[in-house]
Figure 1: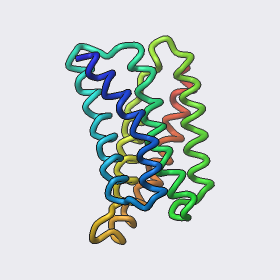
Figure 2 (figure 1 turned 90 degrees about the horizontal axis):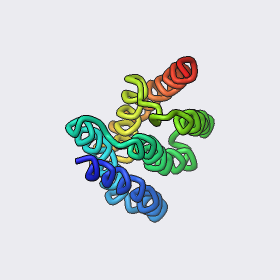
Figure 3 (figure 1 turned 120 degrees about the vertical axis):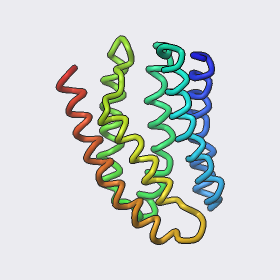
Length: 166
């Protein structure tokens, strides 16, 4: 099960480029489906690792990085389109790089805090709503926009918690 969890993590990292290409070529449905697949694989690899009694150290280090790869593509695209403020996207991505660096220095990969996990869930939900390609997109994008802000606040507060504890 640990190998399967690690495989899902690698698969999620590989989804980042096709997701960005789908966004850049206006393939909204494909982009949305790739982001959904990435979010579901994040949940699934964690569930598999927990079921196996814990994941591998390699998986613990790679998992948060793959989340950053997958989330960065739509964040940058939405920032470039003016849907999200570039400053907010920059702050979020700077936080992700800072914490990724901190986690890389931790022997265990620096396990995610509850705030960090909730931040990731809110980010995925926000991005899925912002990128919704079917009917009702305006209302759902508005909800996604409003979900982005608590995810940013959680990102900053969880970063503070990581750095204070480390």
